[in-house]
Image 1 (cartoon, rainbow, N blue to C red):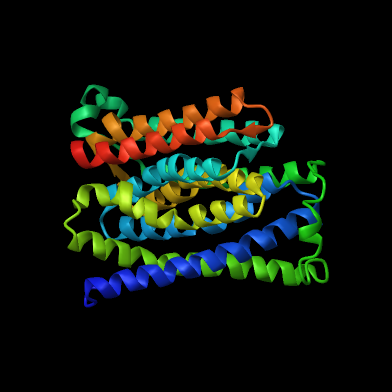
Image 2: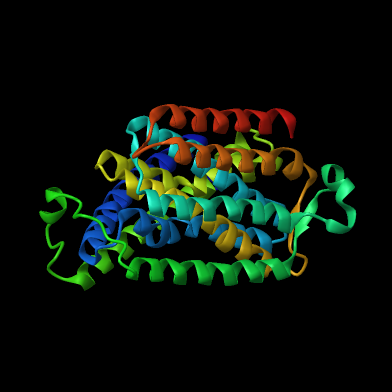
Length: 336
């Protein structure tokens, strides 16, 4: 990417965005078919299979950054992705159309989402020198990385158990039943689902270095690239998948994808990144006075939105989440 002129970089970004859209369209269709075929709620499919696939770019970027000696970039990508997923993606998705809430699943997964956020902050605290967190920061230890990965295995296993304990829903609608080949072969559906995830993730791996290179040429400060531009780039699969799902009338898949992605950003992305580094992941001081508070605040606002909503997450909450994301991004540029 370094040798390409800036107009060519923008052309690469445009082409990969188009490919992302096609991959997300495919991914959503097959995920909905799988949901109907197995009798599993789309929210749960979104929170496990789809979110595991769309979170792969965050994991790849963060683990590579940690191995190459940039642990603060690795943790910044995980935290920034949670802020981006919950603020930008859910905000846009809700503004397009109110999101249907599968109450039991959203409540349960939502508490896990909020708990994962608090767990990340607590695990990063320097308990031996707490008064210095706003000046010297903290660190996510390598041992906690392995604990997070263990919790990831538990989360996926427990999600499978929940799906097998009778959590089913009515078929998604006639448009799903008419999907070509949707019920002809389960292997075909699974292969198409994997293919959709591969196309989305593969497009992201091309897009991310193009975005980073363009950012450097436009003199964007390196200190905030991880929590803003890289986080946005690695969250593009969730964004495109969520928007595509909402436009196709599967908003519950979108909300499940975001909730699951937030959980996986802690357990999978931060966990794997900390586990591959001897000293764990550095959390600079600005994580404790800006990024962590913003992350927890936006998760709490989303949790409140779920608790006070009825059968749908309404547009006003989407506007609030989007406003928090925009404000936090501006503050990152101004204050860091």
